[in-house]
Structures are given as C-alpha cells and as structure tokens.
Image (cartoon, rainbow, N blue to C red; front, side):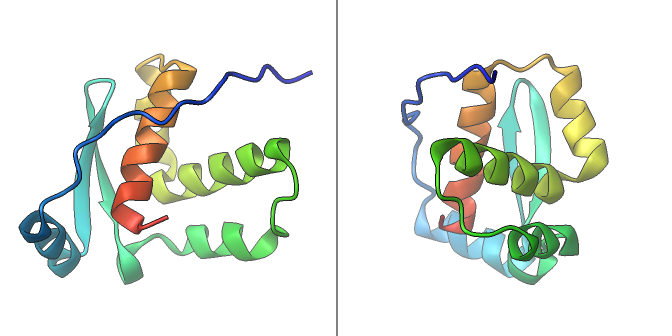
Length: 109
C-alpha cells in the first residue's frame, strides 16, 4: 500500500522573461530545494534518459500511475548524482512536490 499525500500547488514566483530567456539560451537552469542546488538541463540538454522514461511508459491513467511516471522522469532528469544529493537531504513529500513544481515551471509542463 502506497501512502498518498494530499497535493497542493506550492506558490512560486514565475521567472522573469529575461531569466527565462537566459536559462533557455544557456540550456541549463539552477533550482534549489532542501538547501541543495540542482542543475537542470533544458530542451536538448536534458539527459536522454528522460526521453527513454517518457517513451517507455504509456500515458498515465490513474493518480498512482501519474505519481510513478513523474517520479521516474524526475529521477532521470536529475541523474543519479543529483537524485542522491536530494535523497541525502532527507526530503519530505512536500519538498519533492515543490521540486517538481520548480522543474515543471522550467520545462513548461
């Protein structure tokens, strides 16, 4: 049995158009969560594993499938070293949700 935490969107400041253009031009953005900074590849700078995860799974049909899909894609996007750093920070479900919100804000999802 999987524990389900209620999800509320965390308020976050939208990036300014200048910041968004700069991140897009550089191909990477930095987000911070749990005191750890993560370097996120954007567009063609995403790890190929992200595409593999996204294409190897059917479209999620349930909330449980959506959580599993999001977790797999997030882990692939961060890569093993950054995922390990996130886990070492002993994150809560809220921390994970906030990290996902920040990443989704960068990737437009």
